[in-house]
Amino acid sequence: MFRRRTSAAITTAALLATGFTASAAHAEAASASATGSTMTWITGAPKSVTEGARIAVRVRVAHPRRAITVRLQEWQQDIYGVTSWVTVRSQRVKGTARHAFEVVATVKNFEKYRSQVSYRGGGTATSRARRVTVWRWISLMGYQPYYQTNGVILTPYLSFSMNGNEYLGWRADGAASSWESRYTPGRHCKAFRGVLGVTDSSADGSTATIRLGTPAHSAIYTSPTLSPGMQTKVKVPLNRPYRFLIHADNTSPSGTVVYPAIGDPAFLCTGID
Image 1 (spheres, rainbow, N blue to C red):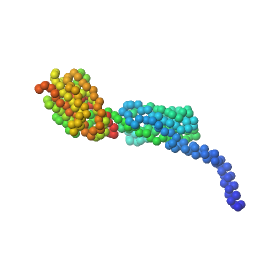
Image 2 (cartoon, one colour):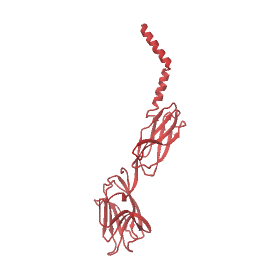
Image 3 (cartoon, one colour):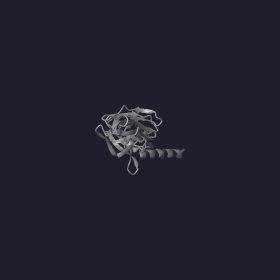
Image 4 (tube, helix red, strand yellow):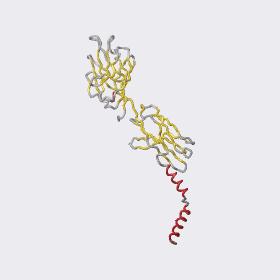
């Protein structure tokens, strides 16, 4: 009995000497919990945006009266391929639980964000990451056609005039009844845009139509009759086709030369390096 009492007395004395009381232990646990991932949350952010769009990110902070600063961090990769979390925005908490940040989508394919809060006493809290898909417009000239008929020209070096404006893009050349080319977006793209018309070098009185679709000849869009001096801007949704087709028909009177064209053609895509 004497040894047990002595041992207990020594233990109690050691705890008192180090200042480790029940309240101190509770305070230490509270400080440690501030380093967990349950003290701050990203409560709102869009699932997807188009490159260049503004992203609104909403953050919630737990125990705001003890918090000092809330930061929005972005997952970034440098030119050497090294990735890290980088603070892109920060705010003083000032007792407020809800905070909002605004950033611009600039990264290919996806942006990834998290929030981080610093607390008095040195603790920090980090949220789970939130991923935002980024869609971007990719020029048709970035795709090599897997098939095209003779007379189709698609190059970044030769411009053409259409309704008095200069364009780069897809155009037909030479006397033919129709022209066609096919591309492989591989189900990465959800829209197509361009300016449809015929080049200014087409003969007076010439006409043509342009059809956008799939190689199975399922039309997504068919233009009105196009003639010199007119142009039609289009932006058409795509049901994620694996192949994409451009088909132009010469609808001019016999012997009349026409050159159908699409200025600045592009796909809206994600998941493409």
